Image (tube, rainbow, N blue to C red):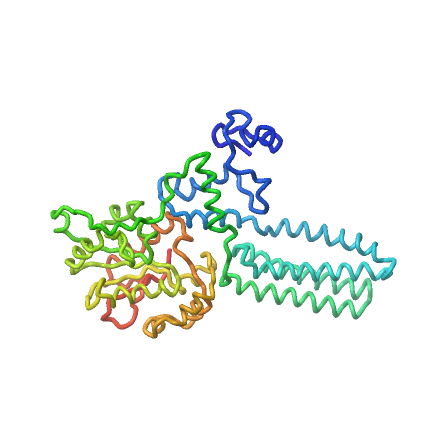
Length: 434
């Protein structure tokens, strides 16, 4: 493992002999990959991940964004089709010869066929379990489904030829046909499902926090990682000359952490908009900002939220809350996330699931449920969730910018926007989330 201070490559023997420090500059290593079990982190990898998620330390990010990003990097190497193919061929021969020979004294020469049959069944089960695994990413599950198809074809071709011309066994022929077609069928079936399946994070939040604490002790905490949003209830003093103006745009987030992220990355300055959360963050300027916004008859409101029961309720809350825009004709554009946008990405998002979310989805008001398609309702009723924090700050900012840019002229026939409900409610939705 290379030292991130001087670049010296230290092998395990060097690191152990020097008490976990670099042999050249004596800088301590934050991680020892050989002692970390299945999830192996090195100092250069962690440093690169921090650099990549922050776009070379130019963007702020949240701890949960780091969690998703690190999880994605570790998950990319979960299942490799080429490595599986080589392993399959090797153990196909080795297990048949070794265990078949071991059992030949009991089962006779048929032991080789029995052992090989058991091996093929085991591989089919292994690949099928992979296609449903919450620990694998979409690419790995898809690769497993395709491997299941290829295995089925291989079993059918080789098995039928062997059963007819070498062993001349009808029983073996039937077994081969059943196993091969089953493998082919399961692979095809799972290939159509992998995009919609939920995933599970490989790393827990406490585990990441432990790694961050260790990193801070040795290399200092990354300056671009955001702390939890602070609740500042005391109203801030704002120059009257400033409050005399208003904004043409408002971005409303369904959580304070996303609002904090956008503000920290100067999205409000670069896009001439106000940024607030549905919870009232930043509290110190919330009331003053709302007073300024209500003075602009041409105000456009952009909503951005998780794909969850709470998230899809955001627009309804904005339109029906006295604190926001009750009895107002303000134009509201929902950037997302909506289930239809997730479905359209064909597995490009990190989907999770929870029984509590399934219950919350079924308790949504009829008004909100009527605005969703049957496919979207099924998605939400299954308890699925996609968080905005599963996106990198760079992608989240790009999507929001794109949504604002695409709504610059609502009178034109812009296919990226969908008018929601009747034509008089001034509520639009972005069809494609980036």
